[in-house]
Amino acid sequence: MSTNNIVAAIPTKSTYGAVEIKEFIRKNTWRSFIITIIAVILLLIINIVLALTSTGSDNVIAPPVISKFDLIQAPQEESGEIDEAAPPPDAQQIVNYGMEARAGTPVPIPDADITQDLAEFAEVKDLERALRETGTVDITQAPDFNIEDLKQEKIVAPPPEVIPRSDEFIPVEKEPGVDLAELQKRVVYPDMARQLGIEGRVVIRVYVDKTGKPLRTEVLSTDSDMLNKAAIDAIMKTTFTPAIQNKQAIGCWVSIPISFKLR
Image (cartoon, rainbow, N blue to C red; front, side):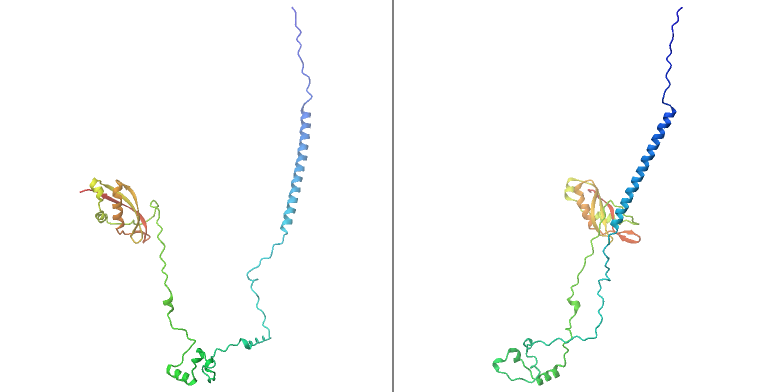
């Protein structure tokens, strides 16, 4: 019996073990530490440079703020000196309009030089007689007239009422009211609808202001467009009772049904 030689390969011992791993970790740890220190130093340098730059821009001196009190001119001290009187005007600038000769002694002048103004010359005795008859007159008194008559009263019309949308909710304690029976009597049946035998029901949405007057209408639903105008005309000719909110009348929308039936 032959025996085969079995040869088993024995693996060689690895040269990479725990010692090599520890050495690798130690090198990478120091490398990371050095990189971190360098990054921190760079960040500090950048912050210092930015701080110095911003400080230099803050040193700019702003212009002074001038308040309204600085603009008021201080009162000047009164000086003891008296201003010199203004020199009299030149003799050529003085114009004689003949006023001095009206109530004084007449001055004889040639007839050719008498102007229309001087022709109305009155002697002192004539003036005295006129004053005795009419009395004294205060020439400084203003004319008697009523200033109110000169003022034109400007009538300012009240602003138009702002009508909300028909679908807008308005909280009220009481909606606008109307006697539907009386309203139905005001409806005029359209001739064309009567001839065609059209009947139906129209619901009109109407806005009633605080005085009970209808201002705007919208057709909410209708069985025939030929009936809409007759329903709207009847509603616009009707006076409603306004809606009540906090015991005060206000404007509000309300739906009114109108029936059209042939008898």
